[in-house]
Length: 67
Image (tube, rainbow, N blue to C red):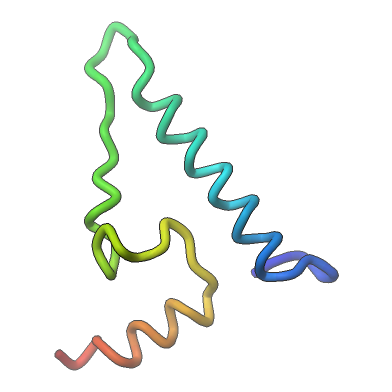
């Protein structure tokens, strides 16, 4: 949930920036193999958003939880 006074759009942009940086950092060369994140495993697959609001998750699970 965004901080008070922050729009959902601003919060979404910030969250997308964070997830992009996390994915980049996790793929950097280290002594261990890179940790690849398969973003296609999100609810709508590769066509779905990388980040979503709590209201969006609620709507998704309300629709698909009984399938």
